[in-house]
Length: 250
Image (cartoon, rainbow, N blue to C red; front, side, top):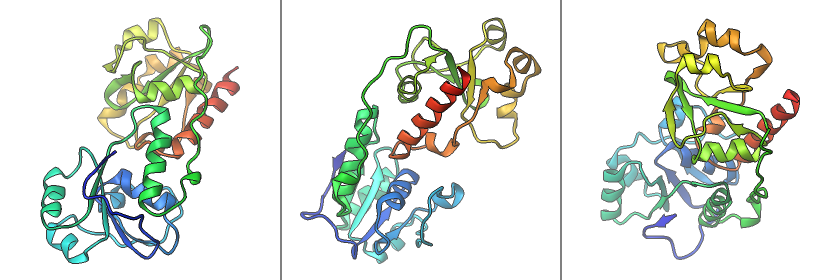
């Protein structure tokens, strides 16, 4: 976490905290006490919070409105709103730029850092599970996204799959465009459809009849899609879901 103009002392529940992006919206709504004064980004209206929350006020993302609100703390991800956050700093507002976790262990550190910033005890953060390596003959899971993109090794998502006891169907690093013929000739043991369930051309790859014939219905797994969008304490719940799917497949 890169901290810019960090407050000298942790904030209390009576202070106002403003988020500039979706991941900050979610972590704040997850951990902030009911009395906290949160102002969420407009992104959470496009991607509704899957958490029980109050009707938090929402800003429109303009410099003028945020400056008028005068929040005690502004949180933003490292890749979001660079110009806006720079101008807010120039105006004397306190901005913290947050780096999202790249490993499962960093999820706990990320959560603890956010808890410190909003004046909550670090003990609320759930410890990262002990690292596990799946057996060599563990079932192979394909994490399939929109447009026929698969998630390979050396990714954050790969760590989640392996922690849940799966081997990754893909054995090369990064995100890859899949070949339908190769999938049919050597199908994975299971496919996790990790994309929004909206009808679109981008999702037709997963609906191809040849792929459907290569895999039985029980091999098509589902998890809560929103848990893949931002790392956080819900990542552990995602691992639990995948582990249960692994046991059910056995």
